[in-house]
Image (cartoon, rainbow, N blue to C red):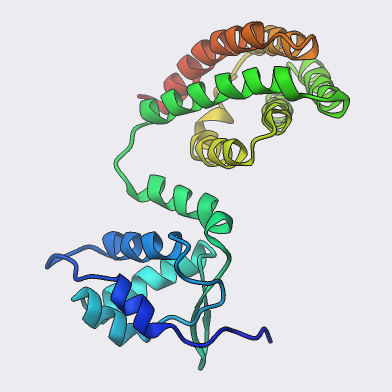
Length: 245
């Protein structure tokens, strides 16, 4: 069993403030996450009891209980029967989970997510052209070859397509960019899996990926960004159509 730091209930309570009457569970979770990702609370810190959190936030205990249950599912906190609830990980460790949660419970549309993804993918391509090494180029080439050999096997094609983009993002050498794209891509995945629905679309996607790959391979940042912009325009249209929006 890990050794947890001493309680910091007073510090946690002092950092929290009352919420408006009728605040939904999602807002209780947001307030707690804001505190947990601020860096003010050490990983492994035991949180105050539910009743104390509820009194401080001026919400019902059930709202706090449900918020903590949701945060446990996301891996933000660790609930230990008979012991208490503990914060897991540092602020940077918690970024992907908190970002995903914020997008899931916030107001958003598929078009908003497509806009964000396009901007991030274009910048990732530019960075990859600057930073990719032989290992990254080889992984991208392998994914592209798999796409070519699976143009009539669309499920396999979709996995190879995703692997290409993952390799490109890793080549960009920016962990925050990796996290952001992982979250946005995963929220669009249900549409991405069925966006390329025939051989003609697969062949077009292969040509677009090849243009990105060639630019990254020769280290041309402008061409890599331009090629990805072309790909994102057609890919976003396909994803939008697949989502029905």
